[in-house]
Amino acid sequence: MVLVRQEIGDVLRDYRLQKAMTLRQVAGRASVALGYLSEVERGQKEASSEILASVAEALETPISVIMREVGDRLAVIEGVETGSVVPDTLPDDLVAEFDADLAVR
Image (cartoon, rainbow, N blue to C red; front, side, top):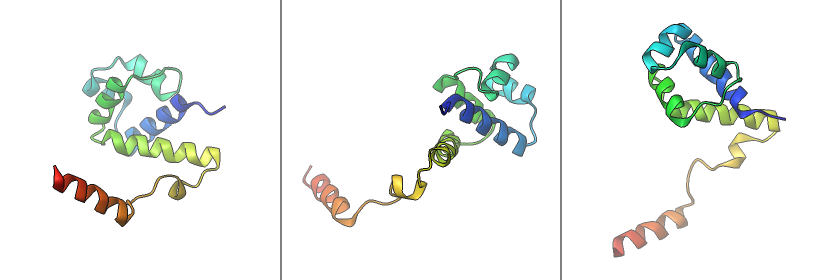
């Protein structure tokens, strides 16, 4: 079974190490207990969205980037092709439909 918390922890650790930051530095900047952040990174604790946002800010990385990386890793584990799951663009006819609808309002 895939544990999302494990992937989130792995991604947070990877970004922290890429930034050459210690666990103590990130915990301090995020106002999160050092032990708790350590457990999150090891996949032992589920972090709330507020904690994830604080840690992302401490890492100076948008939460969307972190969550996209988590999603991409989960897709690999599940054997899903990431490019075919969510389109990067909307079809032109759908965009035109929304544009016309907004112009009427």
